[in-house]
Amino acid sequence: MFSHPSFFCVVAEQDGKVIGSNCLDERTPIAGVGPITIDPGTQNRSVGRQLMQSVLSRAAEREFAGVRLVQAAYHNRSLSLYAKLGFVVREPLACMQGSIQKMPPGYRVRPAQPNDIGACNDLCMRTHGHDRGGELKDAIQQGTAVVAQSDGRIKAYASSIAFFGHAVGESNQDVQALISAAPAFQGPGILVPTRNAALFHWCLESGLRVVQPMTLMTTGLYNEPAGAYLPSILF
Image (cartoon, rainbow, N blue to C red; front, side):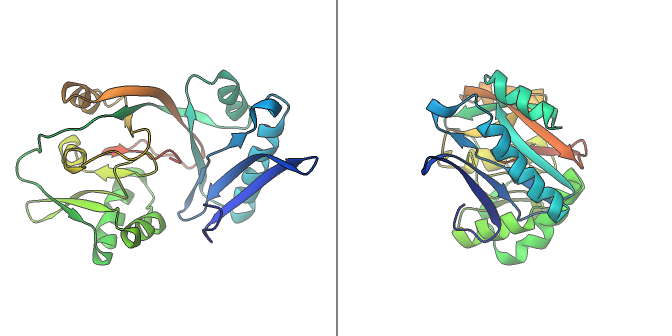
């Protein structure tokens, strides 16, 4: 993230020592915050607030339509800080880990190609009201992006089935195909919106376990999702 030209990253220093950092993903019309890190010995001393204010000032200067983040639900202080800074709770999430061997019938999951970006952006736009084309382009170049096809067209895509990846599908079954085809979930796991009870129950019944609860929070533009999706740790 620190070396990527489309990330704005800041560090906090005290007495010549780095004690914290924060990043802003600027690849899409919606900016994503995180991860924010603070040295345990300097927590609860307003360092986190200053790091957040820095990236939010940057987002305002760049006139992003909205800003989003995913918060660790157990952390009371960060929840309070983000709410004070204007973030609204939108979605409870479950970070889930495991493996699924059963693919829904009638799907082909394959690596995404550059000529898939238009269809994927259209799917994301219909679901969320914005696209994540910059993110998807990077994922295709890195070889992590996949699409799920059924009836001769793309029904779902993912930048990766991982902690730092997002997925969008027309229906739960479309996203289930992406999840089922993943050989492993990189990082702590995938983020499943628990308000989508059918998808959450399917994950549990298929053998996935909940690692930790998390919370999607937003400022600015937000549309209630019109399809199935998995957010990344950024949003």
